[in-house]
Image (cartoon, rainbow, N blue to C red; front, side, top):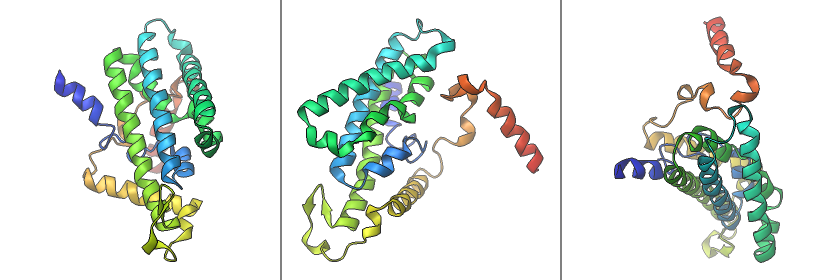
Length: 232
């Protein structure tokens, strides 16, 4: 039992890292990793929302009708995002301004909605909380790694602290969108090499675990299978 709970907590750090393995939350990842402070702030905010939404959805999993579960999940997530946003606006205004629109967009972050659909609705409160913590830490760690590379090499600083020997030797493109995609791709390749390709594969996902399955009616799997046969 302990090993199972430990596995739930740790798998989000590497084997099922939401950014580098599941490739979720790409938009905030690329947008907020120009600086370490922005990246950590986004990671912690998303982690709080992820843990709280996982717990509440797990508590209500037998009450929420299956046909309207996605809208219900979004309402729950939006409620916690609003609370986090208001707290940051009141007590951390500089971070609130730094994150800007991306703080509100946590509501539609695929990591949070995906974990609600794939994990919280099928597990108890304790396991859902551990999953939220693990995935949140994995998300924050991914943002921290990317932001460190981009800020150090692109701006010659770390968390706003200038690095003397980097001044005049920076690669400014790393602080821009192309540099973000470059670092993102390299990090995915490194994680894939470290895990020897044992992370979750695309084929492991079915319509049952897809957050959009209720909308498309599960037809995407049939379409993919048809396309594969046609290509062959």
